[in-house]
Amino acid sequence: MAEFVMPQLGADMSVGKLIAWRKKPGDTVTRGDIIADVETDKADIEVEVFTGGVIVKFLVQPGDKVPVGTVLAIIREEGKPVAEVAPSTMPSIAVPRLAEGPAPSKPLVERAEPVRLRISPAAKKLAADLGIDASTVSGTGPAGRILREDIERAAAAKAAQPVLTEVVSDRQARMRQAIASAMARSKREIPHYYLSTTIDMSRVMQWLADENLKRSIENRVLYAVLLIKAVALALREVPELNSTWLDGRATPHSDINVGVAISLRGGGLVAPCLHNTDRQSIDDLMKNFLDLVKRARAGTLRSSELSDATITVTSLGEQGVETVFGIIYPPQVALVGFGKVVERPWSAEGQVVSRPTMIATLSGDHRVTDGHRGGLFIAAVDRLLQELGEL
Image (cartoon, rainbow, N blue to C red; front, side, top):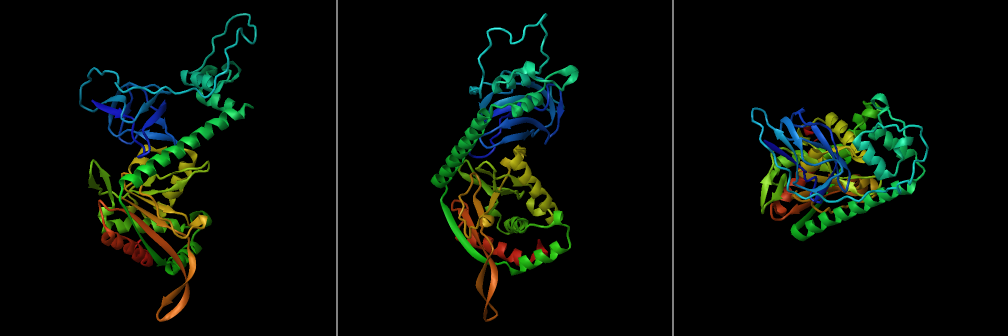
């Protein structure tokens, strides 16, 4: 038997709220299937299952908020017998309702005979949470059954916008608190060292301009993707930086999964990863990068994208920042920062010329690497950007 537990979707997560199950007991699942939706302080996440088999039972119900590590479901792995499963001993955390109107003392509309309201349990609970009178909602399910989506549409159309605004503001506040907690922990526990170098971007920008002339507008390459690819390939040369620090020691990883810091429209940020970044072509990386940004801002990320990153890249060039020295996101051991491309005087072949340049930085964990190895890494990033044929 395998236990499906509430995953830790980042170092700043301690609890999660189960929004909905995507499967039901008796269903067969394979590794990578989306089994549930979980709400965190940052976003609603599509959670994948990491073992295959048949779902025996669910131990946590939608709406329950439980600590990381709580057993949510039991899965019978292929070829293994069913065993009696005891309910999870991990405590649930009570979740305050968003809003609930007072119960009417008598029906709002007198009916000649009672009519049973056809509504799913999830929709009924959501209607109570949002203060929606379900009897006024038209159902789109079988035989007019009211579904969760019907309640969501009714809530969106309702004039009581202050309730929804309060919910959004609460999530933003919780996100900032989660980020502050993780970053405080990072600065407290990780002995950071910092390196920087200025990279001549003239070859990169010229290659990008020439390449994009051959492409349609929707298929043009963003230079940010070239930076991500260069970081991934440089990790092959300095693999110590592709590690995580857990249980007092460094654990190296064979897969290179570059996390990308993405700002959210309502404030805050997430850093989901692009899996096997070093093995993706520029075209595939471009497509997957755009998809990742879109889903991050729409709140439809997958759990593996938030838990598998082995290093993070942050780029603040679009915000006009020339230099960024980032804080390492635990349990990772390094973070790479890129600033904006700026025209600067540059010495080349005995002459001072104007060149587009960019400052690249590395924040490293001194428990795992040192300035020498970090210097080799950031030099490799520079070289790889100059030799675009290797990307």
